Amino acid sequence: MAHLAQASFASASQTQEIFTDAGIALGTPVLTLDGELPVEFIMPGDRVITRNGMRKVVQVEVTRVENARVVAISRDSLGVGRPTEEMFVAPNQPILIRDWRAKALYGKAEAMVPASRLCDGEFIRGDILAEVRFVTLRFEGPEVIYAGGMELACVPVTVDA
Image (cartoon, rainbow, N blue to C red; front, top):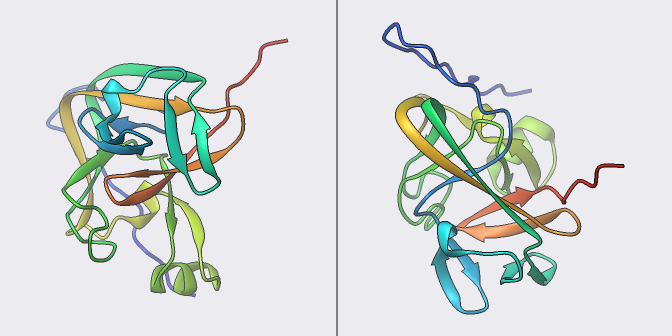
């Protein structure tokens, strides 16, 4: 079975913050019923297009991280228009892949893979940015949204008992 390198993050002696959730960086366009909007413009109640159809956003979380570990995905590195421009996601952001990578890694036509598992060191690479604001969209159930030409998983809202 093929193996892609795990992301490695090198820092120049600064402490790195570890953001363990999924999230996409500010500026990433998300497909909504009003067209593509930067993720930071999406609010609870907005209608986003998902693989399951239109869904309303229930919760939006914005997390500011300094010396942040990110995965930088170069334009067209996962296929034409995937992504449409370079984009930054949290290392744990699940990405739906439907190409040779899914077949090689998992023996399936499609697979949901954390971004850090897709790193090749050139086109998809681990990086550290001085500051990033990650946005996490939450819905009533698990959804896959279209962001920057990519299919990204969103976990549902958690309810504290």
